[in-house]
Length: 422
Image (cartoon, rainbow, N blue to C red; front, side, top):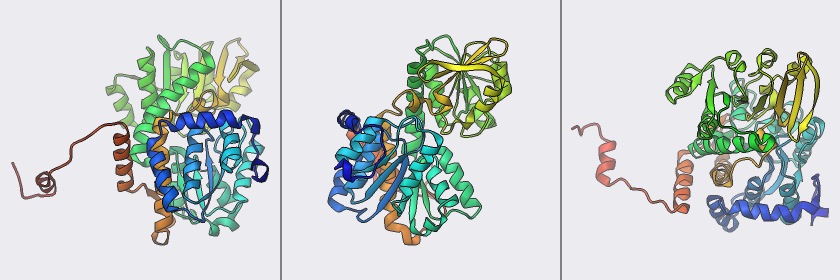
């Protein structure tokens, strides 16, 4: 089968290992499994070609299997050069007949060639994680815009870009911001990013977290998740923010809050999670002490001014896998993890499947909704419908064996009434 399926992956011989790991991930993805069973019977996506630019992991493989069960043709490329799990990519090709264009460590040129290879399939639907695929479609392949009916976006950075496109009137089709679903960002961003980022840092460095000054730039859902996990491991957490409300929240949560330039002088480990550029600048790097460890868990490596760091470095070398040493002219060394890319996927395996279960359930059900409602939708960014969010939460609780109360008719009437007082 693999020879007949267009693909560019590292090694198809990794497929058996990938299959076992995909099955392992599926154990904690009961909601997506229930959706797949229904999709297999109803085929709500029959005839659709879906181009998915996502982190090619075992969890994503289970999403691709679900979409295919729904009747879709699925093609997959990576949304980050270092996030691909090569065995999962191989298994998708060999065992599922899914065209995959993704190799861990691919260079910039190959990364964008893979995106274009996905678009060569002329998809009707896009699934994005960071909006790179949508960006290429709008900037380089505009003739295909009329072929695309709708899309979804997985992450904060992508939603920011897409809302800017919609605001400027250039977005070519309706997109659902999956990231904004409560069953996504409350759990994926907080618990998933928190745990997997710590996992990536520890795997890359094998350093003790307890007792360190751990600096976190950004106190959104991802930042607060990481702050919680770092404190739980004994770190002295420092938060850097530009939003006064989030800064107050960080203070109330018991963290020190200060400017990055002040934190740069005392930090041992730094992690950015903002979605913006040059969050740690060249001058911030110059202020750091010898041995500082710097990484990023926002979507793109532009959060770190790596060109600025390179310009003031006397030398650079690989200290160990996923750790690059930049030696400054005065002899101090700064260590950058995973080329400044998503450390939780560059050096580890990304989010646990239990949280990706809800994220990808949102992807699957949002896509089903978009395809069914496409005639009524405008070219803008939509939230995940509340009933989808609620249904995913209900299914997750059921899978966990958790029962909750239900409002009585009297209680519902009281909540909907303005006439009943004390």
